[in-house]
Image: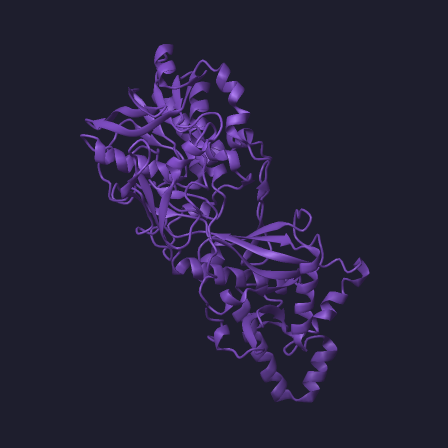
Length: 84
Length: 480
């Protein structure tokens, strides 16, 4: 009954958003590799500052914050963007 | 020929090489395969050409454990057997179902799927099926799978004329085989009741029992008590490892539009997990069936989604140009049950039918792996829908929150499997890889009672495949 973050849906308060685990675009077996790529991109962004972020955005590479994770809310298995 | 009662059979002078007990899909398929090889066989059935209440009453019994269907409701005792109310859904067991999977206790067969694949063509002819399409991956965890909703074959109707004309098959109706008699490692005779009278015995060089996924165990258990020598010499697993296909609606979903998955039929489609996903999640095999909901339910599902996730309207609006051709669906699941020694067909100590045969006590519980497969399987499917942006699924609250099964509901599909399972070890199974009872030279079993594992596929197509294989095996053994 555990989600991939170790938290059960039963632990969540009503209406809580429960993270299911996989980035929406990733394959079933590639989630961990995709998460590692995200962390590396974020670290680079912190070190290099706004210029790098702007550059990455211009180049269409700044996808670290745009990964649409799969979440659960009130039983619905959704994309995170469905809740924004 | 079709005869009514054992007296007519005796008068006929027919001399069978094989006596087959039970004229359902399994028994009739074995008989037809033998007849094609010019081997004479007697095909006995306890019922007549139509089901009757009196005949059905033999199936009355008691269930101990989880709520279950009345034992006289899920099967039919007449010519053609339970095919008389078969739904017609067809798919064979998958290759992975035959494998030993270390996370599923007692899994594994002594043969692979390749042992029955040569008989799939014959099964298609018998059941009127087109070839199955290959699985198509939806993501790494879920495949679209071909589940054929065939026109159900009523074996008693479809093959009656052929049986009437046959010189090799002698059908004997209203003849109840109550027990078998063994001597020197062989079955020598079967005791009979015909028209409520004990009417002696029938003998032949070989016997095949094909009385169904509960009755095969019952017949052998009672025979072991009655026969001077055991009919199943090592009865450790006789009646045991009995299985069902648990089933349930596991949620609702909004599907983006029709035509988003392969070979869809008006919104209906079936899906199953990949072997990799089963291994990774440590779950059993299952199928998900997407069923379009009725119009009022569809609206409720859409409203529920938009109340929970208002921004999902952005996703839904993507279909505006297609006349908002999205729809609400019900998500149905049917799945595998692990073989459990405690789930079993047993004989009642106090209740007997009109012929004096003890009634069935069926011990059946679903178990924790069944529950885990339902929860994790529904979740894998829901994730696939969202990942592929095909749809959004809501998982039933009681499943998501780990609550008890809803009371008063039966979670089973009237699919009776196991009890005389196939295994190379006589302590772990009743029949060997050729469906022969361990320790007996001339006794064979046909039907889903031989299943070592259940998979998720409705069993009829696989039953017919194994019966074709058994018929071919017997035909190879018999010189005429």
